[in-house]
Image (cartoon, one colour):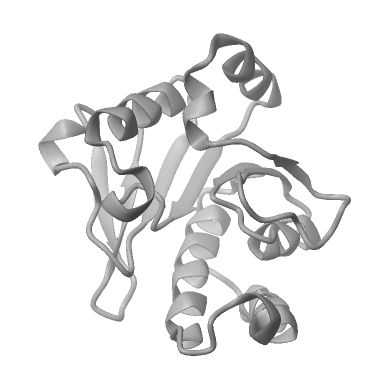
Amino acid sequence: MVTEKEVLKAKDYFEKEWKIHVDEAFDKTYSLRNWTVILGVINSYRYKNILQIGSGPGYFLSVLNDLGKRCAGIEPFVRAVDSSLTVYRCQVQEVLKPEFFAELKKQRFDAVVSHDVFTESIMFDKKVSLDVLHQLKRLHSAILLGFTNEQPIFEENDLKCEYQYLDDGYGKEQLLITL
């Protein structure tokens, strides 16, 4: 499981920049719990190369980087706070384009993570969401999707692959899609 040191690193990053970049009304404790679950899975399965979909300002990427992970993000709207982070400034739908997918495939990610990206308010289109997820599966990576504020845009039977839910201990679940 996730170590106390890993939890404290995540907490430090969120605490340092929280008020500048995030609506203060948002439940920051709940957000930290979600990152902790994903960090626990990354640690348990010893994933070393992680792609984050919807990386925002890059806080989670920074935590992963500090933990010795090789990581990159996909984020269309927000610039990373650390210019040394690898962030592809594009929409997640770009993975459907052969040239961009080839670039990602070269990176050999063993895990793809996201939080509240594959929802109606972000993706809008169920078919595009499923196309993106199926394309990401072609990276031969585990896919970890967190849903805290909204339900997924897709139904479980739409996935057509192995999956399981991981209990976060707070009444919400994280979805782990495996190959």
